[in-house]
Image (tube, rainbow, N blue to C red):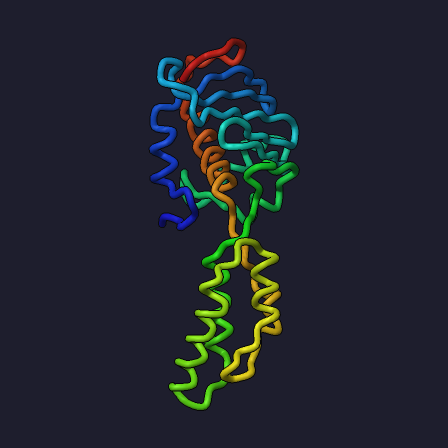
Length: 213
């Protein structure tokens, strides 16, 4: 079953459809693998997978992330329900270094709207007309303002009192308003794909010299 993370698996597959693997070093658990399009087709979204005892790093156009868990991290990323399955929550717990421009998690406007809606649905109302009137004010006062950051979202909701019912979002801080960044999900898909590509490489691939598979 496909997940709903962005980029989707289909979007990722389009990016790497012409990528090739070049083995620069293969002395397990030490590896340096380069994934990129053929040289005459550009270098966009090229990336390296580098492993050493207990660690795996992905670096390149998609950002840099370092994970640590077991001696050979390819064993760690081979798990899952399918060849393409990623586990951002569990894998994120193993992060040792995070891409400075892409991050790991970020404020998500949809989660803000969902949290406001969920809280509103638990409020008490006298009648349907009051419900409609209260929601109209929330849309105009909160949702239409579209906070641009996590701090702004919490401040806006925490300071708001509905003029119709006098109810508020007093425990809004309990809601997680973040989601995984595009770059982190891309890195997860790239690692999973790279491990699969490495495992499927031809027997002729030589670890002692750069080769392309």
